[in-house]
Image 1: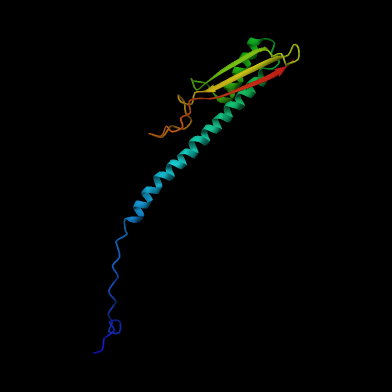
Image 2: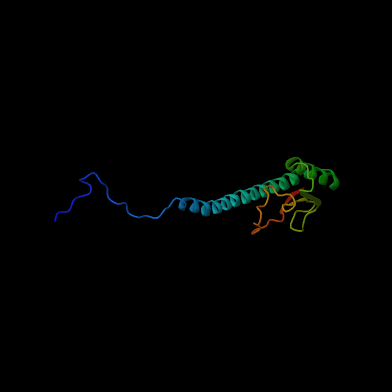
Length: 152
């Protein structure tokens, strides 16, 4: 008995049974996109926190420098406050500035004056980037910086 080749008669081979994989890509995408979005959000959130910390540090240093050489401690404090406000904008509760003009510690030369400016940003009350719902893993409460300038 001879066997006929189904392809020789214009037929086709029976298809191998494979599972339907139409939804596989969608499920994989759904699993990966959530993780990707959280990683991307984390990069933006902490990047903006670092940038804000840098702005606060720069404002404290500039405020202390601006207060140097003023005729009185009160004028030095006002000058420092005004410089920080010019750099960070109006406060509206976002940050506080504490300038202090006083004699330096004992290691400084006699008659030297120091201006200390502390700037504290209330991140929890005024975040630059809003917190993601349910993601309070690494909360940032405040960002602060202290700058001290000594002058004679």
